[in-house]
Length: 270
Ligand SMILES: [Zn+2]
Image (cartoon, rainbow, N blue to C red):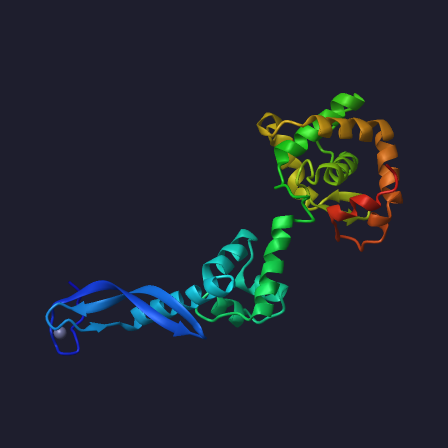
């Protein structure tokens, strides 16, 4: 039994699901929403909370019917991207209040719905800075160990900040992205004064060195061939370092700016 009393003062009030046939913005909708029902006189009455739920249900039924994203779909799309409401709002040039309302009962316009879908779809196509792969320290180590094996030179030397190592993984990642649509390591590369380097490398170097490469997804044949090609093009560390400084995609970027994987098609040294 609910604690509410019915409008006639009876105490025997229960919770019921009520089916409503309604017309909303010219669309006939059928929704079910919770309500209270008096067992004594039979009257149905909704609390403020129940009315809010009903309004949300109506808004979503309408959105579904006319092909707009529902509140839940907007919320899901946003959280999948790892964005806050403020970040999504900024991404599509609206105020945060709009995003909050759309994730509630306010119905977005068709134009705004398109903007939302566009924002969400960019994420599905992939993140241009990680090359459609989640960054994996273990896989980064696996790639560098493969270079070590192919070149017969030490990689991940203690104390070394990957100044040269990162140039090899940069080329391997970029070529993998342009060949397979996915980077090998998921690393983001920044244009730093000494060439392309893992973004936040200072924090990542130890993480990579301490990771267990056997836990990483094994390299595919295509990836191994790419590593062999990069290694044969740049047989020593000086060569890969110098080549990376010839790349326009690095030269053109202000220091610290990320080099998107879509720049892979503009590499000139390999
Ligand atoms: Zn009653």
